[in-house]
Image (tube, rainbow, N blue to C red; front, side, top):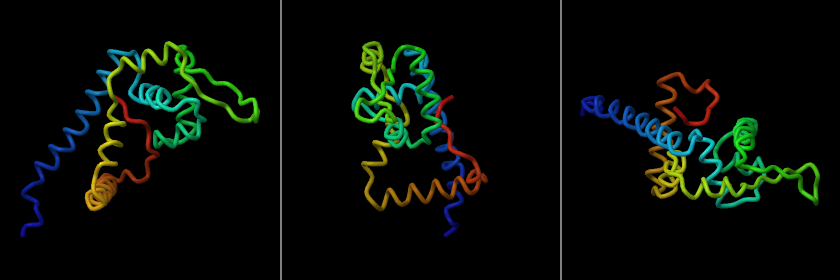
Length: 154
């Protein structure tokens, strides 16, 4: 066997398709809602499970809390998210959607990140391991292991 290298064009095309799909979903979300993909994703997560803490939202989004705080700052400025101090523990900040945030979340398209997570959760253990190892190898080939992961958006 030739190590499957005759399929290199197919592999490259599939990378292009993934990047194109993420870009298209992000553009669609931004055009229909005025929000970036990560902002819309945060809104949709909060719509299903608020109140929620920043650390919980960050975990659900597979992002670091400081990155999520920046996303929340922009959503709060737009009047879509409220941050309130917990009555039980003043150090804790609860996140909730405003009525406008709930309406926007309910009437907006799905985001690529949520679709990816749903798809990953539906894989068999063997498929999941293949995807995880393949992505690790792709990052290594590109020298991308040194980069801090940022939210997906165009």
